[in-house]
Image (cartoon, rainbow, N blue to C red; front, side):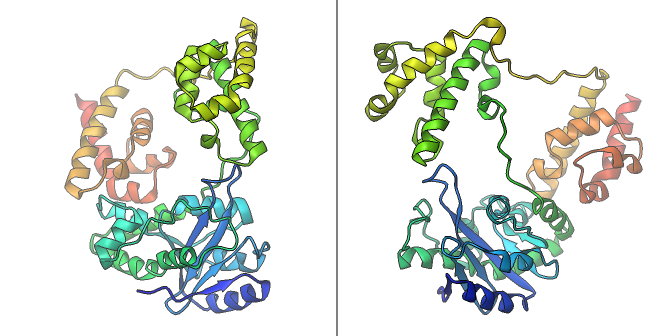
Amino acid sequence: MEADYQIIDTVAGLERIKKAFEREKTIAVDLEADSMYHYREKVCLIQLASKKTTVVIDPIKVKDLSLIKRLFSNRQIKKICHGADYDIRSLYRDFKINVNNLFDTETACRFLGIKETGLDAVLKKYFNVDISKKYQKKDWSKRPLPKEMIDYAARDVIYLIPLGEILTKELEKKKRLSWVLEECDYLSGVRPVLASDAPLFLKFKGAGRLKSRSLAVLEALLQFRKKIAERNDVPLFKIIGNSALMKITAAKPVTLRQLTDLEALSKTQLKRYANDLIEVIPKALDIPEDELPVYPRKKTPFLSPRVPKRVSALRRWRDKKAKDLKLDPGLICNNMLISTIAITNPTDTSSFASVIKMKNWQKEEFGQEIITVLRNMART
């Protein structure tokens, strides 16, 4: 299937395609961003497709996308995406666009028990086409974009409507369509995490295992990296990677020789940042004991000794059910939800109203089975 598309880079063009797409019942949506190249990522292309028309919108040239906000929020028009989480967050972050009536083909694939759910694998499975990843990590913010990159972007989106139709039929056969639609409705409400003044280490994997002095060093390193990345407009990982930061935090070098011997940084990184780092680290080491950061811990509430037994029983049930349905166990009931149910200990299906994060489809499909598991536990 060749990509026959229009490039929309003017307000007049946006107005024209808005009218055309508003008459459609289903449209496919994809986007390209520049997260690999800039500190603050942004949407660089938005691809839309109906069964008749494919367009590639350039939001760098057409900065005001208010004309098509209602197209995305219109509940009468189905929007088909693949791996929509990132797209939903990005569209809201950059343009305050809300997406309603979403059908995410990646979610559909997971609920059909498909193991490889990347778009390239799915298109190969259903259409026997190979989607090149050649441009996946290119800088989409550059202008002008080469024609072959725009071709690549447009080609992805043209398969989403026929893919959505195929997956919908397969879900209907398995009686799981309502499950996916509810998951998609929930997915359409995800939003980007807002910036805050909270310590950066709170979002750093592994920070929770560190003692206070090491946390202070890590925070100083993270703040340094953020400052450099923001100033140079490059992603954080292109300044210093996480593994290198953790290695430096553990060693706490205070001289150039110590930092060099650690072999955590490349020669280029040492040349650029070494002198600054051996100023940053000692300052963190000089912070008074009573001013050191402490990783926040949630106090564990007192739990009935029967709760762990309920968790084990529910996991055994969940794992068997997942095997029977040929689904990932986490789709049936993830571990956090299992813990919540075990603590809440609902006695009948109406009691599930108090179980936060439990979807309606889970209550309807598995509620009675869960109650039975818990009742059997109560008898032992």
